[in-house]
Length: 84
Image (tube, rainbow, N blue to C red):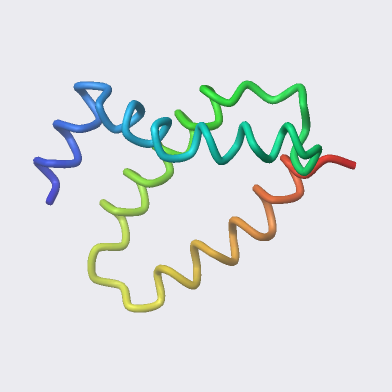
């Protein structure tokens, strides 16, 4: 797993794949005024990719990892991107 994470990260392909998935979703949410219009969607995709790689490499064998990630996303990420 560590080798695949390293290769995805170093090649930049992880960011590309993440942006392919999240870019359209985030754009739709911006259009609907659900998330802030001033956010750089490419940068958000890059940040998501970095977090994915970090969590994959950090929590490979932790059964509670997914819930821990969800808790952090709800507490820190959602409030930062949701439009007010």
